[in-house]
Length: 87
Image (cartoon, rainbow, N blue to C red; front, side):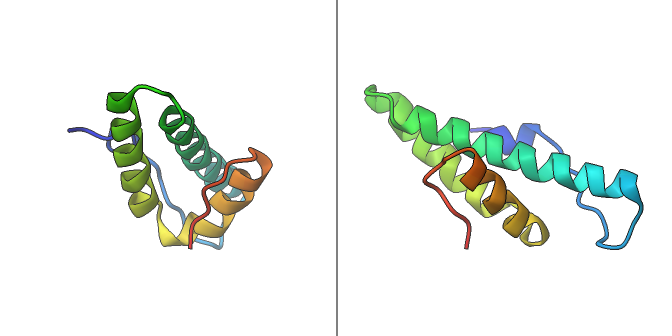
């Protein structure tokens, strides 16, 4: 089964860089957080099949977030008031 994250390509950039690279990193972190929020929202639906799919998607997303972006994604998850946090 294809996950949401496998359909979306994110570009992880070097820490040093100009304003354009910082904006791209910001957009990537925000996109990961939004995907996690959507998977978590699906998990709260009362239909068993959707809950199972959402749990699978959420697990996949948590594994696929690049380590370099995890702290930024966590900040977005806090802003989006999502219960999930990355380690």
